[in-house]
Amino acid sequence: MRKTARKILCILFIACNFSFVLAQNQKIASTPDSHFTIDADVFLGYDSFGFSYQIKDNVFSKIKGKEIFEYKNVSLGKITRADIVNPLKIVLYYEDFNSVVLLDNQLNKITEINFSQNNIPIVVTAIGMSTQNQLWVFNSLNQQIGLFDYLKNEYKTVSTPLTENIQFYQTDFNTFYWIDEKNNWFSCDIFGKTSSLGKVSDFDKILILSPKQYIFSKAGLLYFKDIHKDGSETVSEIGIPEKSLNKFYYKDQILSIFTAKEITNYKIVIP
Image 1 (spheres, one colour):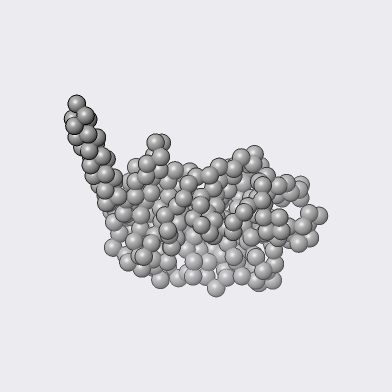
Image 2: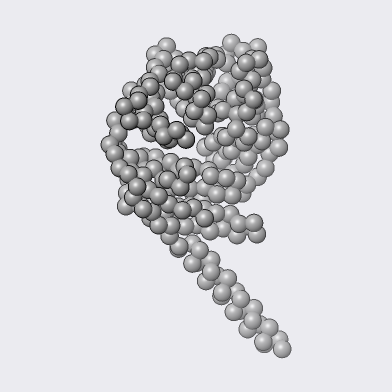
């Protein structure tokens, strides 16, 4: 009986490891959808209305066919980051001047915020659009995540101080995600609930899809990682011909690969 039990355990162990290897080596197919050249320094992505967003010579623009909108603010220096989560209220962050500009859907300025002139001292090193007229803000003075109401000019801290430096962050309306320098992955919601989401794979670039899924590049290859309910993980290579990519973007089953001066869009199915 003991020998039989050992054999069963061995078989199960081999089967589990074999399944893990298969999961690690499976590939997600991609189908070319469209391809076009682009004159931009940074490609930012698309919105639900079909506009693409990019930065060229520190000019922020949105383009769809012959429709072109542009915004430039020389006085604030270089655009550090652009948040297009809400295409009706776009966030441009100018780190050198600790300032943010909010734009409407035609890239007209809604408001400009200089955090150095705020009643509460804030030095912004991460920012993004949140809900209810609020901005996600990481204040490097106290190493905490907060929410800034740009209509009321009010700021509140929602997280405890972070113990490690942020190497990557991404926001949506309800969540501030970040990865520290040890590749630990966390999230903080608008109520201040902070969750540890595990450890991410080594990456060159990364795009978070959900608290359980992300796409990342490493050594010229692109991968999708899925964390299952039981804690197991699946890493799948995404099959694309490009071996040199500046940035990738994923939305509505379209994967966009931005190389030096062109964009190729692929249709892929993420499980």
